[in-house]
Image (tube, rainbow, N blue to C red; front, side):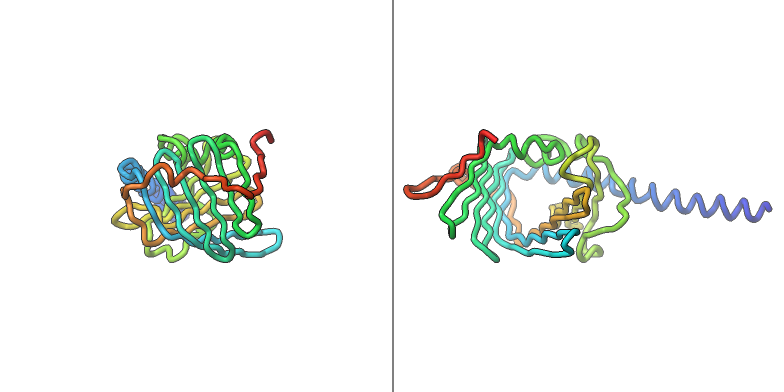
Length: 221
């Protein structure tokens, strides 16, 4: 009986150290990530985005280039499979479809109200909105090449059930960014050729509506 109890205690202790040891390691990682992110004022990178629809068991892949400037200014150029631009400015979001020659305009509040993404859109800390977890499944590609962070929102979120980040082992830059919703759909974004703290003019984050372009105004919705 004593041997059984001893084996149980050793087994439980091993499980405890595995679980909480991973969380402690992640805690150190989140500090290093935040230090790097605090020093990053801008970045430019190529991206590939994978969207998985769990209901249809279907995957869509797109790619392009992103420009980012704190606090939360972004311009996404989608080059494949279809040309699209998403511009996130100080007050508005523009979604431009060159093929249809139309632009959809929304208030920034429609995105910034998602509290879990505030660390990207505002000068806030990741741990203000997330806690560390051990995931049921890691969706990070080439896991051995990265330092993983697995997080869940501190507040119930309609849009995000889990966030998984893959960080560079030396730079602590975000290399993969995965958002999983409550239906187990996910959006995975891989960043490559990232350059930090380059000069980007604020005009990059304004969209100029030209004559003849159809404007779909969703700011009152």
